[in-house]
Length: 180
Image (cartoon, rainbow, N blue to C red):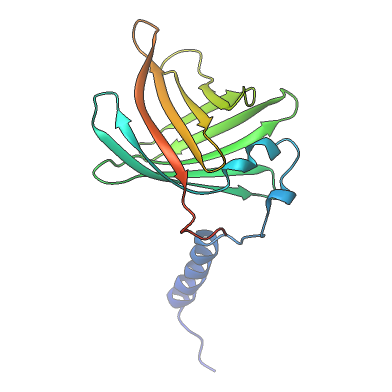
């Protein structure tokens, strides 16, 4: 029996590894499988279409997808601006039992990594504030507007220390996209 060359075996093994990491196994986690700490955020699960404008009045549209991951411990948010804008972000939201607050880490296509915390819902608003003590400070405020809509407002601290609008979008649940 003739063995395949080492390079062919390596390419095949690497391809299988890449395929396995590119298509993570879904465990079928449902709202009922969400941990108690994360349960208040399960409302976000699904696909959303958003539109609004930047502070300068230019339009912005995007899609956001929220999924429960890793045994119900994390809420993953994937954000993608529609062209011509190009911001992409992958966020992981969780609950810190010791500190008794929500956490979020955002990774973006500009090489950014930012950390946020939120005490929880205050009325119908969840505000994720950047935990940095200096440098770029920003926050996202998610305001529920019924069962199938929310408004997200992005603000940042300007040089004088005041919160300044970056953009605001209204998002509606996209029922056309099937839940996974």
